Amino acid sequence: MSSDSTRSGIVAGIAIIAVLALLFGRVASESRDELDAARAYRQDDRSDRALEHYRRSIRWALPLSPYHAEAVSELESLAMELEVEGDTELALLAWRSLSGGLAATRTFYSGSQPARERANDQIARLLAMDRSAAVDARLSAEQLAADHRRLLSDQLSPDPFWGLALLSGMAVWVGALVLLARSGFDSTGRFHWATARGPVWGALLGFVSFALGLLFA
Image 1 (cartoon, rainbow, N blue to C red):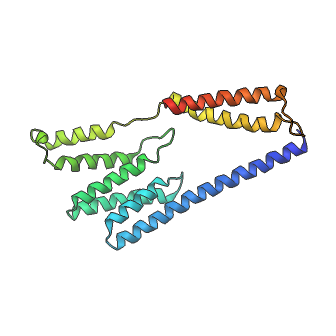
Image 2 (image 1 turned 180 degrees about the horizontal axis):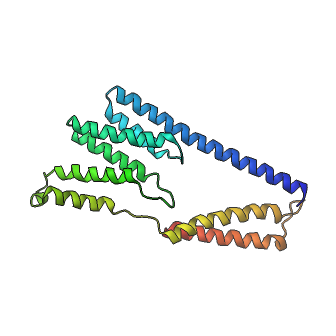
Image 3 (image 1 turned 60 degrees about the horizontal axis):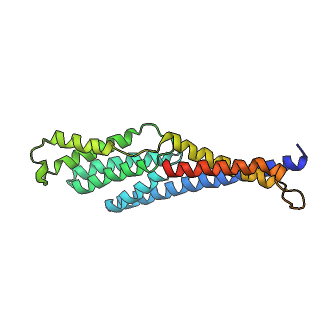
């Protein structure tokens, strides 16, 4: 490998690290700011606005970030506090905000989320307390809660195969285009099919895989 290629690789690596650092910094900063705003509104007894900012803080999830866990814990505490005060409607909204915020942080592979399971349990319980619908009159509170819990558990998840096809296809597509830009042209900018053939086919296959994954995942 020539010194120019080595230097280009180092520069590209530094650029990627810098972009990732800026991205992670932005996520952490937004999560902290939203958490601070939620705490301020909670101190002012404006729980409805606090819920909104807690939910946003949870959505700005980052591995090992303390703000995400703090927002989850404080939102759970606020939901229980609201129910004790008799504001069942706002308590239900708090649990829904927690469940929805955690659902929005799912990645291609997400493990179990105990906090979301607890939130869904509370949502089902509070919904079962509302017996205004005539169709619910013949069901017990336990049966209603079980029905609501089952509905909350039913969720559409990405198909693992097509999700993998989407992610790997995008990686191959972008990588092939980078390779094409580096090896498909000579120093004068003239296109050479002999050296560009592989990257072109790679980019085409990667794009097809990405498009199919986007369609079926």
